Length: 84
Image (cartoon, rainbow, N blue to C red; front, top):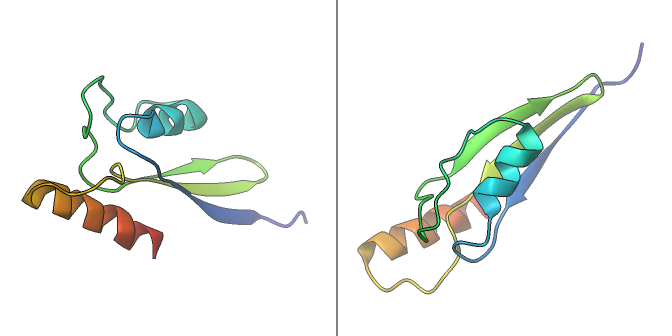
């Protein structure tokens, strides 16, 4: 019997650099909303890619940037908590 493997991938980076687009491409489905407007992703988005070899849990985060308001503080907090 072949050993089944799994792991986690967290996609982090600055706002509007294509994190959600990358995750959608790797999964092969449109899971995360994408747009040209920065800060479209406001919460962590989690999805699972499954193949014969194993599973990968993808976590897409809001962009990491200096918070300038309450919404920015919330999104930064969400991204930082996802890393933990």
